[in-house]
Image (cartoon, rainbow, N blue to C red; front, side, top):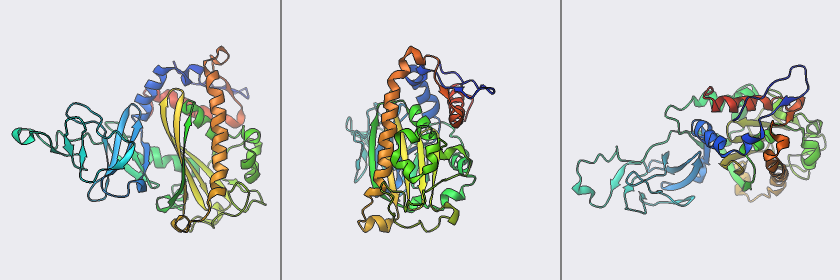
Length: 379
């Protein structure tokens, strides 16, 4: 059973979640039900679905969700389940349906708004309500150029829980809006299959106590990270580039110029945001990096990482490898550390959990949030 970490006001150390929180299948099932199936989940980059009928299927908690674009160009989301006998409607991860969505089992057919439009012998069953027997719709919102879905019967406020995470981290929504992420183009996408629990990945992203140890390239560009205080430790704080670093690149060379609308005080700084339960947003002057986590099992998490640049940078064929390589190495280093930690979660040495030092104390708030969600106390 997951328990709330205890605070020790007179001690430098705070206890973490117990080891079973990262390995127990029942705990993971509860997280699927009470976290991933109740909160807004960042599913797909909107621009990936570039025409009517383009689709992507994503795993959200225990459900397969189908996201497609209708004839009007609007994004729609449905449970990926045929309403006839429950067959999986789209079995591929992505693709394009030119005319409609058809179940491969009995050929029940739906339009891109989810309405039942055809089925064998359907005309002999005039009493069937084609809208009522249509696909189950899933609420969808777009923000930062991504489609967010929510499986809850009554979704929580998107403004409070999603946009609110940026406000909580940066101080206001305008800070992130200046990057105009929705207008950026995809320069690179890398998918990582990480043999670790999703919470270990979030905890790692939230702290920089490890940065001096495993991130030499990152601390070369962001030297304050070597002192162990992550960007998310301070509201509104962005880590400043090293004087000799021309850009956020693996070799310290210049990038592609500042994004047009970011403020002067945002230049030469790195900002990191965690949007619970599964998104990291990284802001630097010339590009944005977005991580989306897809928890698949207690000990397995798929992470999709996008590097986004101005459209003219991508269209020109500019070499973005130096900026991609910096955070790709950071990702590899972080995920290796998480995979090295995961097996120990079953050890008797971690039965009661570990500890957080002062520069990690803010992780305790994440642990309490997880505990409250599982207890049904949070939104």
